Image (tube, rainbow, N blue to C red):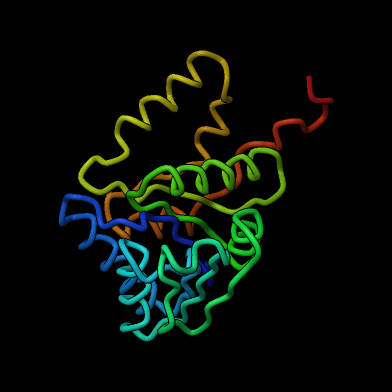
Amino acid sequence: MPLRSICVFCGASPGVNPLYRETAEALGRHIGERGLRLVYGGGAVGLMGVVADAAMAAGGEVIGIIPHSLERSEIGHRGLTRLEVVDGMHARKARMAELSDAFIALPGGLGTLEELFEVWTWGQLGYHAKPLGLLDVNGFYDKLSLFLDHLVDEGFVRAPHREMLQRGASPAELLANLENWQPLAPAKWAGRQPD
C-alpha cells in the first residue's frame, strides 16, 4: 500500500538515552526526504519537537494536532505546515487517525502507549485497515513485545491480531515493513456477535 501520510506517536520528553533523539531525528528526516506527510501530536518539546523539526528541515509537510488543554504544557509547535488545536484527547486521536495512512510509535510514555493501543484496537475491530509499527530503538520495546506474545499464549489476543503490529530497528526498515504490510486478520467480531 503506498503511504502518503505517517502518524508518529512519541514522547513529550526526550528520554535519557541520546539514541532516542537521534532516531526521532532520523525518522523525521526520512519522512521529509521521501515526500511523506508527518502527522503527530503538535508539541514542540521532547521527541515530538525533534521529529517535527527534522521532517520540516527535510522539506516535508508536518501537521500537528494538539488539544487546547495541552497546548501550553506541550508547547504547541508554531513552525509547522499546520497546527490544529482541537477540543480534547479523543478529538486529537481521531483527527490524527483520519489524516494518516500508517502509524509509528517511537519511544514514549503512557500517552504514546495509549495512542498506539487505541489505534491498534481500532484496527483489530475493523474500524481501519492501516498498518502500525514500533520503531524499536536499542531494544526499547523488547519487554513490551514479550508481554504481547504472552497475551497471545494466554488466549487474550489472536495471533493474526498480534501480527498487525510491525517492528523495525531503523526508519527505512520499519517504513518498508509498513508499505509491504497486508491485512491478515479479519475484524475481531467478524461473523459473530461479541461475547
